[in-house]
Image (cartoon, rainbow, N blue to C red; front, side):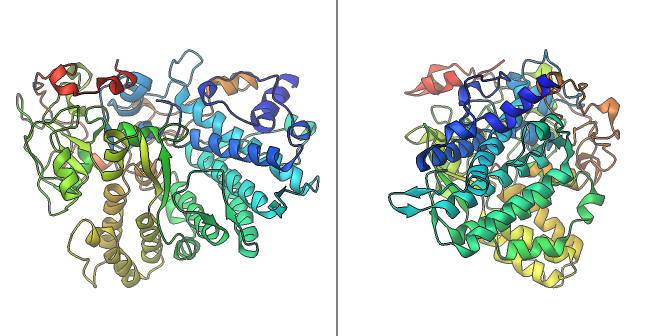
Length: 570
């Protein structure tokens, strides 16, 4: 019991600043100060809070190179594809049929689960330290003569709500720790299921909202928001993030149907009025998954996404076209770039200049040399993601800097539209969809005013996959999960990391594996997206011949090949 107390206290209550380079290590920091000694003045408290927001970022969008779970969730959602085995991108995220997640002490890429687990719990620890000082020690946060106590308290509750929200969406269970927990409460901690963790996230976000509604302030020094977060903006963000966590949490269609959609509609209607964007500097702040997406051969766009825009395009490469690349897809959706064969330099991909000129997102590329056919030719793709913010982060200067959207206004509009449709107000849903990205960006025909609920929902799911791509954490995965459309054997959530389970004396467990399809925590595949409309997840498929281009070809590297040295391949 003493061992359990010490680990949990350090992980959940004792962390003040989590060092990003050690984020994947479950090592007790015996030098970590407790809250009583760490917070002696207002600047100390704000430093703890800033460190907590850094931990939250590292557990979701990540400053830690390659230690992010987003590509794995996108792989499970058939939104991203690769045959690179680094960090489990191939064998865990995209290989088919789905394998059981190797939640073992010997698994070399356990950071897939240990990184978000440790960072999000560290964020909760920091938030608890701040809440404890203000609410239980009557600590006043006065900076240069200005009382910032309520601003700090709102920021702490919002941080804790964000962390619990991600834990609820990622994992099947987590600890819930109060700011006033002492040794006895910590020692007696037990896991709470994802629904209880979501309830805690909502309570914390609600508390932040309540404080912001009656106190004027501008929340600064925590995250590099491109727009200042006034108390009014925090209220809007609280509403939108709460709605997102609710919509992202169901593991089954039945749970999705059980959502209080009227509540979601109200939250979204009072949510953000402009996108939540981070102004990344490429040094202290960057979005690992977004900026590496600019490396056109690293994480390709899965054909499921391209097939949505052109339903004649095969959902698995190469669809009986041995020895030749697929012709470009064709669509009325302006976000799909027309195909081109123009050769560019520095791994920019054949379609990047066209993407820049037209503002399209999904660019065509003939080079398949990055893919290893022995790991599955059906995993190959001719498309990479070339949206403007990805292009700026990867190809512009400074490297990895630029706008990094994490919550688009269109996501908020689509949540409100879905909630309207699910509560029977289909005409309102049609109006919302037609006011958003489908028409204004995609250039598609507006939905007919007499569209059915099913037609509206399908249009919403389409927009969520296309317009929200690589913005919100795990959105394609959460959407297929709640609709019951994940491939057979795909995990429905992450397990608590093996390192944590071992330390607290709990048995190791895991999810996933086609042999476990339909078991608790593992998708049955009965309604898998690729087994619908005459398609089959099982093929048949024919292996292509790669283009023969060599990744290390100096003519393709351009003037600054050093960037790719940080992009491991194995």
